[in-house]
Image 1 (tube, rainbow, N blue to C red):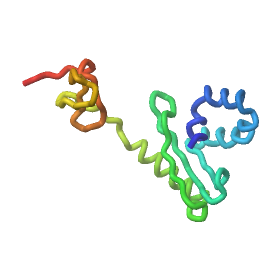
Image 2: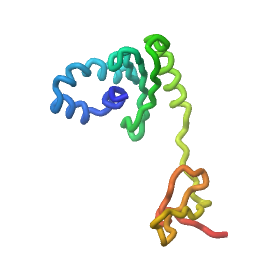
Image 3: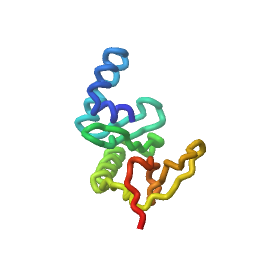
Length: 138
C-alpha cells in the first residue's frame, strides 16, 4: 500500500531517498512502476506467502489513501492482481463524491460539548460544528 501512495508523492519519495537510501534503492523501481500503472503490486515480496495490490485514492491531485486487496499468494497470482486493480480503478472512476446536505442538522451530544455546538449531518457522514453551517428553521 505504501508504494501506491509513494508513487504520487514526490516529497515523500525524496525524503525516503535521503533518509533511507538502502530502502529507497530496494523500492525505487516498484514505486516508479506503481506510478506508471496507477497501482502497486506486492508479489509475495514483503511476506513470502502473501500477495497484494493497492490502488491510490486521489483528492486534489494527490493520493490521500489507498484501497488494498491482499491474500494468499497461491490464490492471487500476478495476472489476478492486475484484474483486481483494473476493477478497483473502474469502481473508483464510477464513484462520484457526494457533498453532504447539511440542511437538516441534528444535535449530536458529545461528552464535553456543553454548548451543543456539534451537529451531525443526516447521512451520518461527518460531525459538523454549528458555526460551519447555516441552519434554517421552518
